[in-house]
Length: 289
Image 1 (tube, helix red, strand yellow):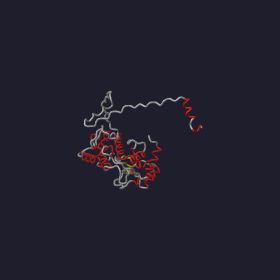
Image 2: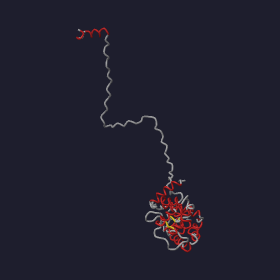
Image 3: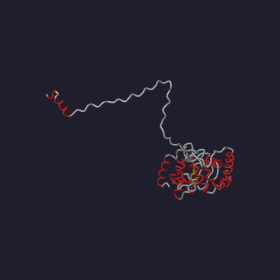
Image 4: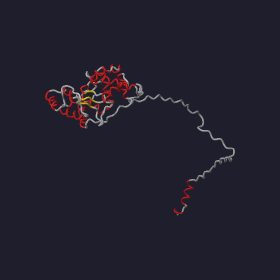
C-alpha cells in the first residue's frame, strides 16, 4: 500500500507537468486478458470504450481524456467554496446541455484552485470515463491516487479500473447478457436514454462482433510470466572400456623399413684413486713448489 504522502508528492509532480505521462496504449492482449476477469470478451469491452471515450484513453497531448462536470463539482462543495465556484462559472446545481468546452483541463485547473479533491471528483477520466467520485469503486484510496494511476499506468490501468467499477456496481451480469439498457442505467445514470447510451452501446457491440478477435486463452503467457520449458533428457553414456587409450596406426607396406633401435652403450667407471696417490699428485703441481 502506497503511503498518502507518497501519493501526494507524486500527484503534485503530475499536476505540475499538466497531467501528461507516457500515454501507453492497450496491447492486443490486454482486452481479452482483462475482460476474462469478469467473463466478457473483446467485443463487449470495445463497445463500452468506444461509446465512453471514442476508443482511446488519452488526448493528443498525452493526458487522460477528461470531462469536467460543473454540476458534480457543485454537489461536492459547500459554503464559501461553492459560492466561489458558482461565481466563477465552474459550478451549477443541475446539468446543462451543451456546456462542455473542447478542452476541460483549463476548467479543472481553475476548479482545483478552489478545492483539489472536489475538482478531481467532478471529472470523468480515461478509457472508461470513470467519475472521480467513484474512486473507491474503481479500486483506489483517493481521487488523487486514481488520477495518478491513470496518468502513469496507461490504458491497461484505465481498463482494469473500469472492470473493477463494473463489478462493484454489479453491472457485469448486464454486460455479459448484453442488456444494454440495464448496463447504461447503472454506468451512465438514470438519464441514459436521454443521451441514447443504450442504443450506442448496442450499435458498437454489433460492429465489433463482425471483427475477428485476438486469439487468446488463459493459459497463454499474456502477462510476462516465464513460459514452462520441458525437462531435457540426456542419454546414458557408458564409461570407456579398459585397454590402451589409442591403437597404433597400421603400417604402410610401401614405407621403408623402420630402423632397428641402437644397442645400449656401457661406460666403464674411472679407476678409483687412493688418497695418498691423490695427495702426492696434488703436491707435485707447480703452485706447491
